[in-house]
Image (cartoon, rainbow, N blue to C red; front, side, top):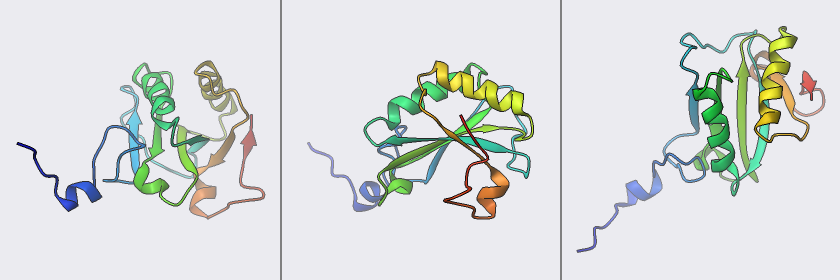
Length: 141
């Protein structure tokens, strides 16, 4: 007997895969050693733009690095958040944008995972102040 899926279940489908999840805007992951992660004027993130085809595989790489305490935390846009856009964004966070050494350490981890193209690093304070476009990036590497 075939079980019918309700309209609400189809519309707000939950999935572990960001490319399929329509139940929320973001999936989050934090390292086991980081318990007090809060977005502040000091935090910032590397922004990785990926296609819908690649997002699940790329998120899996970053998720494993977080589980192994190589990266502090990250979030990835889901299918719901990415509706009407060409792809997804993965944000990999660092605690303090003024700590250039930690920013570059995180960038090297991302390179080791295969993210070798130039990425932009953005301060959370700039995101809150809606700074986009020209001058959006604090750092590119």
